[in-house]
Figure 1 (cartoon, rainbow, N blue to C red):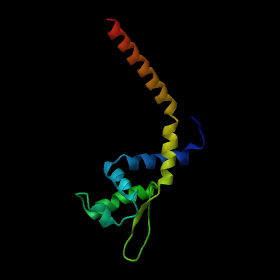
Figure 2: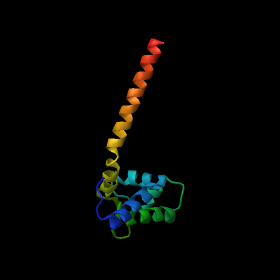
Figure 3: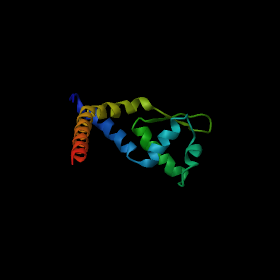
Figure 4: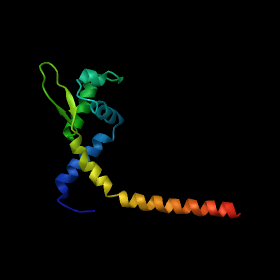
Length: 119
């Protein structure tokens, strides 16, 4: 893992993971992956108030995952997936660990299968 100017990077990464930790916010992001939507459109499938959805949108906006524009009376939200790249890059640092762990598991399962066939 490369250690570079962590303070600002850590704050942004913390905000992203904090925003992604909530299942409602993940569903909102999935909805916005299909295109921009108003608060009313986003709130429709949820059993919560529009102000509650607005609070979730503010968290996503603060994390840089959502952008809101003013369009006459509406304030449509749209996904800013490029900011998720930082989280993906951080997680990719663990890819080698996961690969090694899965290889070890494969070896163990193969050994157990061999023992079962011999016994």
